[in-house]
Image 1 (cartoon, helix red, strand yellow):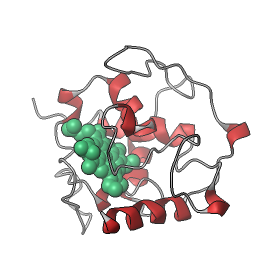
Image 2 (tube, helix red, strand yellow):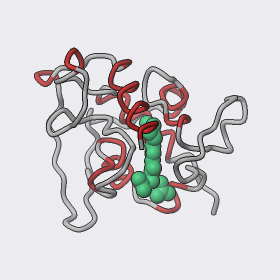
Image 3 (tube, protein in one colour):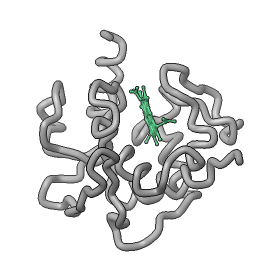
Length: 152
Ligand code: HEC
């Protein structure tokens, strides 16, 4: 657990600041299966830009924990989380958007950092409090990339 806490702090420390006042308002629906149906930006994301965010260690840093076969050129793939291969077959887009924004809505004890959340976080370094890891645009771009990960 200690290692994971360190990782989480690392993300918070490297985050680009998006302050509370700049945050987009969004609606969570779906009850037991929480979803964010609407794009945070009102537009679809860009998968190529999302790919860059996914592998950027100073952004989502998804590869610290996840494996993605499609990203063959990325040297390090993590193994503490499920592979993202075929993730678009397993979840609806609104579910995936919710998972990027705040994975705790699905897995309350997850080590995966909430990428677009400010309230109710723990152990965030003081200078990074009140800031999100990704921008709304980056959430949509990452989602667009995840939607390319189909197997079936
Ligand atoms: C610190 C590790 C960590 C990082 C970083 C991380 N995740 Fe995760 N993620 C997890 C874990 C662990 C799970 C499995 C849920 C659980 O049990 O916590 C998960 C689950 C998921 C799932 C659901 C997978 C499935 O098949 O059920 C998606 C989608 C996902 N993550 C996307 C991302 C994306 C996109 C990023 C980067 C923006 C990211 N994750 C960054 C740890 C991480």
